[in-house]
Every structure is written in structure tokens, then in C-alpha cells.
Image (cartoon, rainbow, N blue to C red; front, side, top):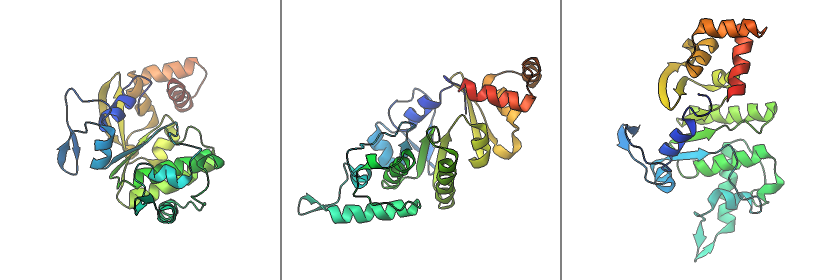
Length: 232
């Protein structure tokens, strides 16, 4: 969690090998890692699904999932095998579609599931979801959350970046707060109130937030939540 400019995107780019870190350490499975490129990050088990689905709508669902890693037979793409594997990956996410059809014929929610399936196809240990709910309606959000809970129960670590406070508390075990490019702290979600979360995000004391909310004619909780969402 953090306002615009807090460092969320920078952190993602460090973890995925887009940026090289200047200081600090990244640990995975008990050992220090340093991804030099997005491909190296994937090989280490770190996959990312970005806010804007970065897929090719003109290609089939299977092609999007396996692009660059297509199963081959006698030097040619094994379409039957690729479609079967795609079907199995999507079934893991409770998605029942024909993976041979163009991705662009499906909803944004299904396209996002295809992006997650692609991430899982590289044996991800850590799945980074960058604002995954921003283009989804409430029903689609709940379907995504079902998938996230299932993946979490299977032992997959999920880094969930969002500005919706209710979603944070619905899904998260721990909340990491960044502010002005710095690590503010990490807290158990059940032990951190929403007002305290907002206070730590923007660097203002609780009494200041309450005064601002009162001045604006809002309740402390509702006002703070609205301000936090807007600031993101």
C-alpha cells in the first residue's frame, strides 16, 4: 500500500529484474537472489500480472499462455498439446473456455485469468498482481479473489498491489506500507485499523485525519477511506 509515488511500481520492477537495486537484499526460499532481467526473474519463480493486461488479443488464448515456450513436435508447434495444457491451466483457475479461440473475443476478466495462467505456467513461486481489480466489476472481483484464495492455499505467495482498502482487508494477511520511496513498515492486517493504515500511508497523525474528516463533514472512517482511494 502507498500513495502515488510511494515506490510500489519501483519495488515491482526491482523484484522482476527491470531495475537493478542500489542497496538492500531480496530473499526467496531462504537465499538471496538478484534478478538481472525479467526472464531471469521468471526463472527464479517470480511472475507478474500488470494492471494493463499485456497480451495479444489477435492470438489465441493458448498462444498467449505459451508464447515463447510453445510445445514442439518434430520442430513444429504441437497445437493439440498446447491447447490441452492451456485447458488444464485454466481449469486450475476455474475458467472453462475454448483456448483455441482468439483472446480478444473474451472479457477483460477472462483475459486477466489467461495472464495469471501464463504466470503459473513458468512454475511461479511468487505472483505479483499489480492493481488486478481496476478494470473488473464486483462479480469479477469476487471470482478473482476465489482464484487468489485457491492459489494461496496451494502455497503460492501473492503480492497484491491495490488502492481499494476493503479489498486489502478482505484478501491480505500482511500489509506492507511504502511512503515517499521508503519502507514505512509491515503489519498483520487484522492488527492494523483502516485509520491507522491511512495515517501511515500519508504520514499524518490520526488526530489530524479526524480533524480533516470533521471539517469536510465526513465520518473519520469513511472520509479517510475516500481520501486514500482518491490519492491513489
